[in-house]
Image (cartoon, rainbow, N blue to C red; front, side, top):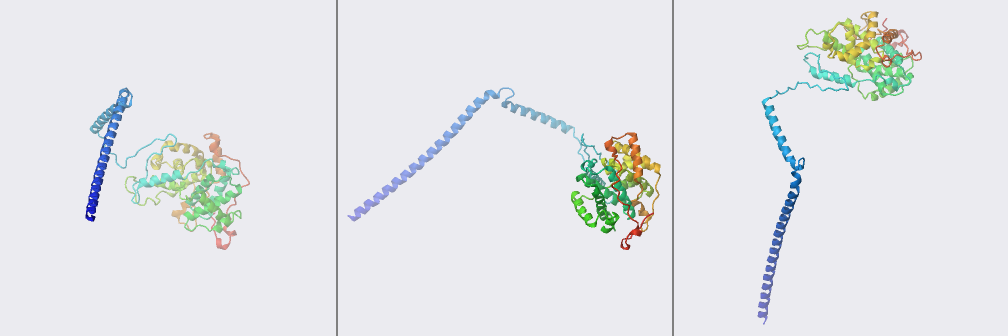
Length: 434
């Protein structure tokens, strides 16, 4: 009895397992069939939709100017491009070398021609040197109308300040480069600031000369000496405080190519025997000292007038060279006549007055070699000569009143002349040049 029940139970389990296997296989087949039918139905529906879309778009695409015409346009452009390539291949243009020059015309700014007057150098690439020089000449610019920013200042005050700085440079035997560096610092500083008081203007000039001397001079005067020449108008602490303000305002851009540097280069180029071969030691001066003194006399007078602010340093040096020496100005400077003509016309009155005064002689300074004497800034021009040049310029009526920069004489701003060495302490001995 127990054996029969066990057999029945085994048969029942076997039957149920077979039924379960059949159900699973049936379920898998149904799922597979449904999946395949779904895929077929999706493909068929997609094909029908594409067919309907094609039929609906067929009529509009055949119209002219429709999207269907784009294929014909592209085909036509491809044929034209192919014909153009064949024509270009038959007339090949030789490749440009790396040294080829491209000129782009700007109708709003003057075009600087890519003329390099520098000869072949054995220590640098002349193209790179000339490019850096032109870049700096454009970078270190001044506002020719910066007196509109300062309601308390007048152009005459600037002339008085520069005349006094020239005297200080001669007493302390400072270089011309130091003076023109200070001139650049003053003009750019006033081009940025607003409403500088006239009592502060001497402090600005003294600080600019103090910074320039530390950059250019081997043995610059001490801070106490700069404070001393102001006769108590500026203290040492005030000069140091103003130095920080000036350096921050100028953004530490303290290395312009000054008028003096451009003049040295132009005179060197004008005196070269050959400009084609390499020129060793191009940086050593080979021009006569008397020529340099003649041109700098004119430049010292011109920079006292605020009309000089409208021209770059290279243009000013080139124009002064044109008035004082018989040179091929375009070949020496690289500037065209169109670029130089406005400055040459403006400088004509100053040149006539300078020539009428006569040629200067080279001054001799104690402890300064004769070969370097022309580099010392001297007080060769004064305010009386400036007034005469401005009167001549006004009589010719060649420029507007805005460019003449003529202002009434201001008596309230008169920096003292540097004291003689006999009145100074023994520790700060200064040689006075008679």
